[in-house]
Length: 294
Image (cartoon, rainbow, N blue to C red; front, top):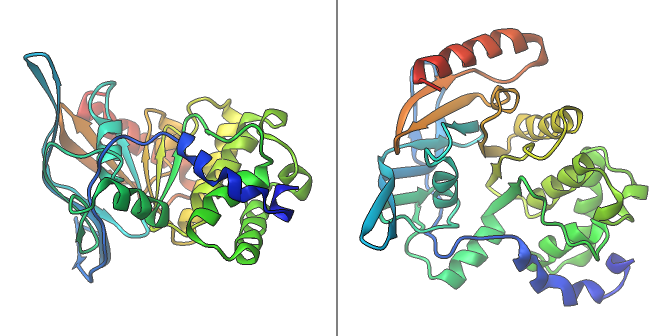
């Protein structure tokens, strides 16, 4: 297997197949604390935007997608971004994660302004501080599941033994057995591949995992299994920011931000997810979305 040889080293740069937008902004660490909205306990702000704007130009026409957004993302939260198609959900996610540069405004990750980083330094920063889970998994088909995970880990940590041990621990935690580790993505189900993609996102112990429609291409059973993994890692303290249009996925979050016409139209606090309160969460979420005109 690749993880038992040195062949993994030749595959490190292939992780660039995972899409990133050009550009980005910078990130760091401060003790900025807030009580936040009503009912919120003291939590550290992990991401903060100030007057964030993003526009796209097509000839003489300029489309403003994000308009002077001021939001705070809290450490340990499962934050969900919702909105109608074209509202700017993914654009906001890419900006927050440093995958795309805003047109104007500020994004701070702890105490660092992410716009201060060059593209090269920003890429290194993302590898060390951000995990990504996409609708399409972007696993490398010619590598085993284990080696897909190790490729990401070895980009940051050259201690091969430590990375292998962490990969094994994480794969077991998401229910992927050693038999599956040795298989290739084309041999597995979509749900199994997405769980492997989550492990890849977690291998470098990122401060935040960003997920863009992570269950969008999965059936309901596989999608629920993936959501169970995301809920479990959030319960363990992992910060998650997820974009989704799916109600079943959205109710896993404790905080819902609704983006409408380039601004945050409202937010809904669902509290921590528990299977015992799913109906109440569903009712509260659907009521909130109805108010937002969803």
